[in-house]
Image 1 (tube, protein in one colour):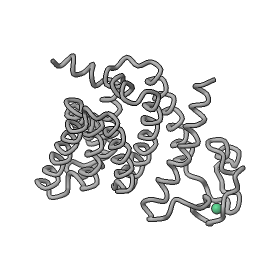
Image 2 (spheres, helix red, strand yellow):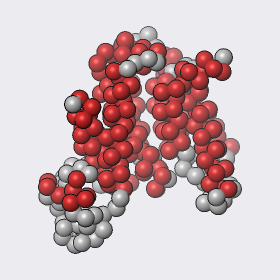
Image 3 (cartoon, rainbow, N blue to C red):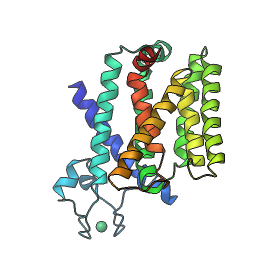
Length: 257
Ligand SMILES: [Zn+2]
């Protein structure tokens, strides 16, 4: 029952992630009812039920019959799954990194992880499609992690420092590649991740992200979906690396050392 509730909650927040994904790159405000991107007609609440409406409407807008993108139900569904995954991590804490967060904020570790998931999902899709990471989303993540660090106290400076090390490293790459390899959006975004993971997990996070990025890059070149030297958005890899590190980071560190 709880898992089902968390999944439905995830669908609703997935619907919110879709709003972020559509409106932020266009510079639109987040307030105001949802409307169809083609005919701009407002969408009634019964046509705006996550996942369900897409299928009931047979993926067409009620007013203009324009096809609705698969991105909407997909993002909602992934958000539902992600929420369940975060919940399972929360009730089955076997990893000492998460245990230490729970030690600092107790139950709030769950809302903390869920909030981060929604924002990271939005960044993932926006960066994949538009090759940008909206500042607003990076700042939202920074604020939440700063609040956590202020409560946690002990790790405040270590984690702050880790954040700046990650950021400076990407800034360095940004400068030597003359902005081709790494965008300034990535530089601002990793400040959050470094502060979230602290030392040494933040370094592992960057390492895992570069490794997955390189691996996928090679595969894309081999199947001729990408050309060597052509830019690929790095944000999605940082996010995949984020969850690999969150779930298996400590196990990987133990295996390495
Ligand atoms: Zn329409």
